[in-house]
Length: 403
Image (cartoon, rainbow, N blue to C red; front, side):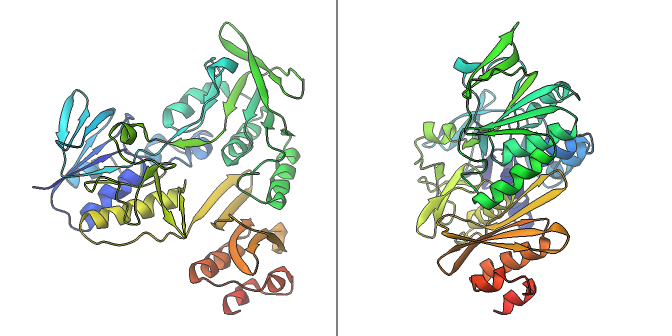
């Protein structure tokens, strides 16, 4: 009987094994995860769960009973330490697990502050796993002072949660503006103003020199703007890296992640990969997409291809971020834009439309679900409305679909 082993019990791994069974795969399935709980949603971790608005069980993607009921052998709290490609086995928990096909859905790991500047001190946190958030929660008391390092979406979402909990929040970003790597200056300005309106001290062009400590616990920081503010805790929101060490040790090709082809297959024909850890061909380039949508869509495609479908992956990227009472929805990828069209909407809704010449690339929509849905449909259809129409406040956004 054919045996598929999936390493990594996150969003992608859970989607992959569920799709295998839904599509009629009748062989053995083993899903191996390092954490002690079944696959769960990550986005609510630093929001609803941390705020006490969502229980642990509600985080689970499926009830734990789902896996046994569907003949999926779920190994929790178990680390795969090696892949023997010649014998087709993975080594985990002191024993060997044979496979006919293997899928790596190992996800990503947060970048941490270096030990040289105090990254190992107590009170210094990252936001990625359930354990990270559980460790952080006791430090997040009203009135305490927190330093957020990094002005990307991870850092900004952490700043919003801390501010909502009544903490004194300082956010530093080494680049000249927050969101510089992922968004236009207009979107950066929108979220800078939003956070400052909620009392967050945002310092752009400012980095961290080192952390101060007493009894191995952080007490403050020395910043590159020559200030030495006191802090009770620090959250590093400086990005994530693909978890490739297992694949690399096994001799698989690595290229900004585990290198896969358009079908999700690695350089070993018996091994596949999906999710944050996998880089794939996209419009003449090679990219990784760090999103729930990509984890699910790519994993389900890999499941079908493991069963012989031979389908290429053609994603239509979308993302979201919740900060205070603002829902940011993003459709497309803005890489290569040379123009941004700003469009206002009702009730303070706002959207930014990215163009490269006359071609629409992406849309950032702030509390503007209509603009987001129209932009997403336009991008999926390969249509680009005239920028002048988008900018005209008299244009009904829905008519852009007919433009």
